[in-house]
Image (tube, rainbow, N blue to C red; front, side):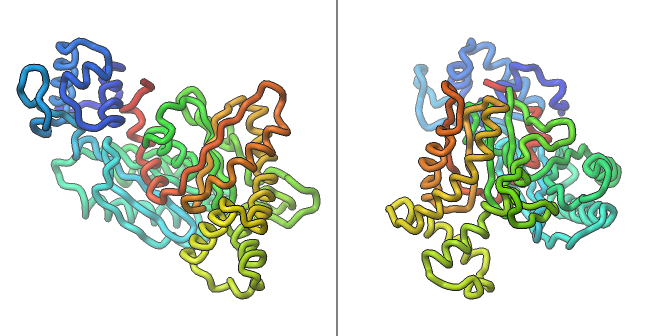
Amino acid sequence: MLLRCSLLTEREKRVITIFSRYGALSKKGLAEKEEMSWATAVKLVSRLENMGIVQCIGAGPQPETTGKNPLLYDLSDRNPLVIGIDVAYSTTHLILTNLKKTVLAQQTSKTPQKPSLSELQHFLVEQCLKFIHQNLSGNDSLKGVGIGIPLWLAKGEPTPFALLQKALETHCRTRVRIENNVRNYTMYKKWGGKAFSLDNFILITIRNGIGTGIFYRGELLRGIHGMAGELSHLTVVDQGQTCRCGRGGCLETLLNQDVLYQQYVQQIRKEMPLASATDTKADIRKGLADLFSLAKHGNQNAVAIIKQAAYHLAIGVEALLKILDIPDVIIVADFGPDGDALLPYLHAEVSQRLLPGTEMSARYFPLEQLGFAQGAALLILQKYFTRL
């Protein structure tokens, strides 16, 4: 018997969330985690097992008080299944995943350059149907497709996400949900575990631009026009460098991974910008990791670059904290293991700007590329989870 997640009770969603959070558990272990009776745990596990959402995976390695090795239960590998799609500048990544967030299959394709809405629709339908045909059988339960799309792909189109969603649902015959990539990554950080305990947090990605996702009271905050927390095009300096949005002095023109890399090339490697013109993404990733490692170990040139980055970023963080009053900030970037070298300088800059009594807690996590597609899948799977 397979039921839609909308028919799950809140208690059943709590059990699913506990399995997702902690992995395989015995019925006794579940009862202890949820602080419920063993009989209730048996009833809930049996119901979810009948739905195909939970499966018995065999006896555990350690005996319980009865002296017997307990049976362990975990979320099903193949029910429900969801496809997550991340549409990025150059590549589009598709994954097949489940409630355990296991990547069961994946595929990468080249993203069309500057597509119209109809071209983007055709591309996504083609990729999705091909992926379904190759990776799902008739016995599989596909619950939907989640997609991450950057706003620049649908520039000038009215309500692009709604139009794409309707078309894709018609062609793929399954539920489709679409959100921008950074909000999907925010969803991944929430339900993927790193921010699991936080019902309110701000996530900021530093890549080609500055992306922002806001979780408030356990839900993504989007705003009326889907622009909540938009920092990339916050004006930081008057008459600054022209931004891709057509205005000048936007935050993303002063702080992004390419700007940091060029500063690294000129001020650390002492090379002219032309010397790095042919550097690959791997070169940039390695250079940024070196920059932050040097800063962490006290290299003055590297510290100066990081301090300047923190100064510019603090302007945006200050605005978000004063407006939203959400103190937990997560910085995500491809800066290597020492990317947290940014945090003390960011904290110092923001603290000078905040009102008395306002606090900020900042954490850094290295970028996980699959997190965007995983977050897209969670647009569908989040309905199975609940706050603990």
